[in-house]
Image (tube, rainbow, N blue to C red; front, side, top):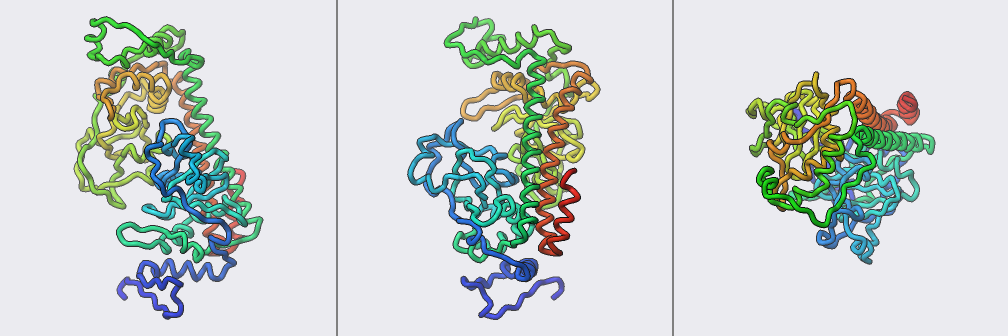
Length: 471
């Protein structure tokens, strides 16, 4: 066969819809089916009630602050759906009679069934939420929700989703096929151990989130802003001299809260001084604006769409061919900081060693500072804090599509203390990152345990988990 695959099946062996496409009979899918046939399995429909989300148009009900409305893209890379940043809808839309069937409950498992098929998320909290028809809602009845979510998100579950999807240009999973999708069952002890690891991971993520908030609150306390709330003035007057000096005529720019913010930080007695961003960095640079082809293996290319909690994951960012030429200014080095300039404005992202040499898109501006003077993690924290974000809010330009320019970012004031002063805040941030990595590790350990249980034995899988339980 010279490296090609061939699978031979009798007509009587075909499943009920008579699938005869080559993709369905790939060797790895057939081999997995044979492995699962040796185990105790139930179908997805026997362990969970399955439906899908809302089919009606809802976009006119999107609001800035409302009830989460999850879509297919929201489950990608988010084992816990609460990690995502979904669109939100009004209470009135959420309470519509046609929406009630898609209301989510704690313990639901969401499976993407259109587009990027097979991505899985667990609904961990009892927060009110709903979702679109691009997601299947699996409501477990006789199985631990966390175990089902791990099983479906593991390589085993991913293979099953890939095998059972249909279509040509737009592929998808049909709910009617899920009564043929096997779910491997094991002892209560094993399935509970897998679920325990999910709980450990969620606890680590919560710890990470709390530490991240602590880092910002500690900085704001140091700056005298921890108890400050921006005033909302009904009217205010500025002279033409101030307007021409600022080069702005819009009323928003001159709101009193911005001046009050700076005055509080400037007059606060602290071991820092306010320095403009432009004085702390080499000349700022815009990223690459060319349209590029993405490949499986190549140079990482950083986009705003790939940001996850103000970080890039080297394993999930898109890549471009190594033979694509970039200017030196379109590449990042370790300790650079990228600042988003369009779309979601003003997110500062420090670059680690894993992304040294990556290219970045034009929606970012690159800052490169002397690390003996300012730490990249501290610079990012300062810009991402209330102090930095309110300055971003003031200096952005544009109407429907706001943006930031290099001169605007250069004008941002950074509270600068010595390196040991900065390190106090960075230590908290690093602890937060460590907890996030721990959560990722625990989830991967749980997924690997499911594989081991199927490929080897339940005993081997339990032994695998036990070595990580208290680490």
